[in-house]
Length: 331
Image (cartoon, rainbow, N blue to C red):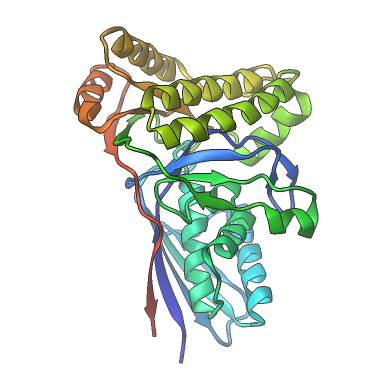
């Protein structure tokens, strides 16, 4: 009987960023990172084991993905099969409910969902840490979407299998904070350069990268304490400076990597104005032009209204801490 499983996973937004790998094959990061999984833009993936098939078939949003994207999924399924001691190929059906490749962590949600569904379809029993390590092999940040809420991705030590065993995500407490994250979409189209390529280029050519990377170590220490103490203002201040430092390192690359657009900067200006008006709101931006704003849940509607007033903002979405992936086994 054919085995199948469907998983739903959610994107996570890094507050202390992951940008740069020390091992490309195992997707081992230069530094650790901390993120918040949101209850927005889930990805739903169904993996069906297909005995007799000669190749893995992949469909994303009702269409065949690009050849590199297909090969990436196929390589990941090969890894799952090796761990499970299986040989059968599979079909993969994925639906993204949010923008893809626009700096909104679609790959994190996508590979977290694929890891959960593929492990179940191939009857591979994994504890949460092992599942996080598996998801990391598909997309580094996917290891954090294996958990809900605030999560820390440990950088680990070493390269290859040694590094693989020590690099995984784990959940973090959030103290008494009641956070929200307001997402301002200024451009939902795919970005012109992938995160993987932009990351590699920044590490190789930016004279500012290593200073930013070193600053992440202190940011991680301070962020963990601020989360445990429930200090949203401190969390926001660390997140905003860490994100802007990452983009500064990209701008200093040769040639520059520029994800920020005039529309992004207009949102950053509005966030600064909200703070002048007494609203604790703090921006973070990933590898794309869209801006996420951390605030107290009680202030989310006010922040959202402020962002909607920015002429270049296309849509605004209020997110709260999201759950770990859900799984449904099919037969």
